[in-house]
Structures are given as C-alpha cells and as structure tokens.
Length: 160
Image (tube, rainbow, N blue to C red; front, side):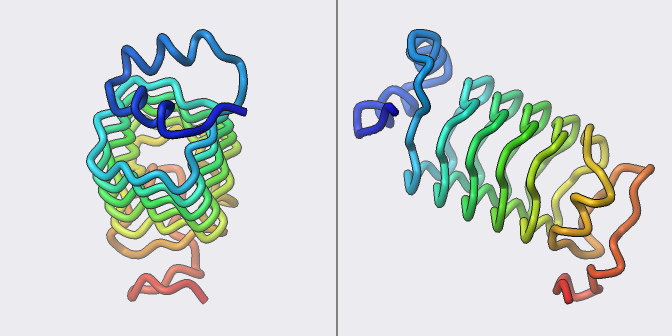
C-alpha cells in the first residue's frame, strides 16, 4: 500500500506525472481523507485507489479511471466526471450532487445512499434501475431515457 504526503504532491502536480508514477506501481494507493477541492485530474489513473472521505468537490475528473476505487463518503459535489470510468467503484454515501456524469461508465458501481440530487446522468452507461433505487435523487437529477425515477425519490429529494 502506497500512501503519504509525497503521493498527494505527485497527484496535484497533474495527470501526466501522476500517471507516470502510477504506471510504476501496482500497489493500492491510499489517499483517504485528502482535501483536493477543484483539483485538475482529467485523464488521471485512479483505479483501485482509496479515496474514502476525500474532498474532491468541483474537481475536473473528466475521463479519469476510477474503476474499483473506494469513494465512500467522498465529496464529488459539482465535479466533472464526463467520460470517467467508474465501473465497480464503491460510492456508498458519496456526494455527487450537481456532478456531470454524462458518458461516464458506472457498471457495477455501488451507489447505496449516494447523493445524486441535481446530477446529470442523462448519457451515463452501465447504470441500472437497481443502482438508482439505492441512491438518493430528486426531480432535478437527469437520468438516461431507458431508466425511470425511483418511487423512493420524493420531490423534495429525500428518500424514504
């Protein structure tokens, strides 16, 4: 397991340096609790990374690789996740409110209690009705045409 301040320094230096570092280690990366609001991480390879409780609100994660990552209780509020690969990620209780997830791949992602209020999932791939039923959303959550708003979502955005 790789962790520490040096790892965070490499991450904030940009996706190119991060991806070069990441290509040299097959170990898991521990970044839990890191505060990176507004981070520029487009195209970053963050697969199988522990990001539990991280603050990544309004981050640019466009086309990032987050497959199998742990994002429990992470703040991704207002983040750009367009074209991101989030397959098999654990997003339990993550805040994705207002996030842009158009063209993101969410196959087998764990979305229980994930806040999707105001998120744009209109062209997300791999999303299922079961995943939505376990998440929290509201009337402003944009869904793919083949999926419907769960009955558990109320107009106030509170799940019952």
